[in-house]
Amino acid sequence: MNEPAVLAAEVRAGLAGIEGAFVEYEAEFGSKTTYRVGGRCSAMITCHSLGSLGEVLELVSPRPIYVLGNGSNTLVSDRGWEGIVLRLLGDFEKIKVGPTRVRLGAAVSLPVAARKLASLGLGGMEWAVGIPGTVGGAVKMNAGGHGSEAALWLESAEVYRFSDGDYHLQQASKNDLGLRYRGSNIADMDVVASASFNLVRCDEAESRRRISEIVSWRRKHQPGGQNAGSVFVNPDNDHAARLIESIGLKGFKYRTAEVSQRHANFIQSSVGGSGDDVFELIWLVEQRVEAELGVRLRTEIKLIGFDVERSRHLRGE
Ligand SMILES: Cc1cc2nc3c(=O)[nH]c(=O)nc-3n(C[C@H](O)[C@H](O)[C@H](O)COP(=O)(O)OP(=O)(O)OC[C@H]3O[C@@H](n4cnc5c(N)ncnc54)[C@H](O)[C@@H]3O)c2cc1C
Image 1 (cartoon, protein in one colour):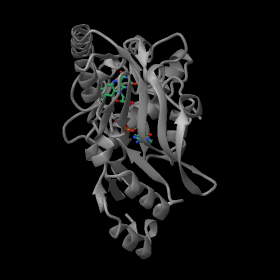
Image 2 (image 1 turned 60 degrees about the horizontal axis):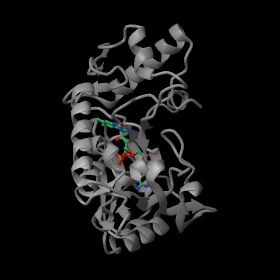
Image 3 (image 1 turned 90 degrees about the horizontal axis):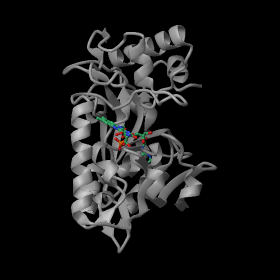
């Protein structure tokens, strides 16, 4: 991979001088996703504070970045990605609790937040217990389940927005963020630093009971192992899993990748598997559903470093 083409020497020198930011060149990328397959990125920059994040963005812009949360909605190709991956830790893992309003750093784990808020008698975020992502990823994707979603509870988010060639820190209201079914208008260059949610006071025992119920449901209906949850978004008034199962693709394999026996919209990778095999299987499933049922499925998962034309097609573009 051609790292110097991505970051010139003066940029690398500048990054080395930013307190609270750590850079690793030719860093492992795919192994940091829940698929645990795929190659490296040119550089991985980890920021521990809002200040260091601002300095990093100023230095590296307008080069493309990929903000990596917990990688639970990300698939990386085996040859990796020639670009900068940004990770948030430290201050971004903080939780600030008010009477009903909570401010969650972008790197806060959703299951951790769900359990902590329930234990404080704050209801609303129980649905997040089964989603192995971060708050930043959940806001961008408008993650949800069990009859709820981020948009229902989100009030605002602190976002570094990229526009006119520059970054600006914005306190964006929910309306500014344009949350919709498994998406938002948060662009790939934008970075969510924290999010504020308006919750409700609730009975702690009731909230914990709801959490146990959701955890049991997930264990029963969804596979463990290496995957990134639902591969395709559900088409209007239907379920991607139902369509895939209806044409006999449950359990269908391509080399190290397999359509889950338990949930047909999950594609599993095996230990030591390959990102390219998962991508190929996603492609085969999409093509078969389109040819046999006339339905064009669109991926929910972010596909990084794969064939541009096929990735576009899979995104529904
Ligand atoms: C077993 C399993 C079950 C799942 N179940 C569900 C479910 O029920 N409902 C659901 O909605 N999803 C589900 N998912 C998918 C996934 O967990 C969610 O989409 C989650 O919100 C992704 O968060 P992440 O931090 O892992 O995102 P990543 O995969 O790291 O990133 C996803 C996207 O968000 C962006 N992003 C991440 N952090 C930031 C940030 N700070 N600022 C700006 N952009 C950012 C990335 O650039 C990328 O575009 C599941 C996944 C798994 C593995």
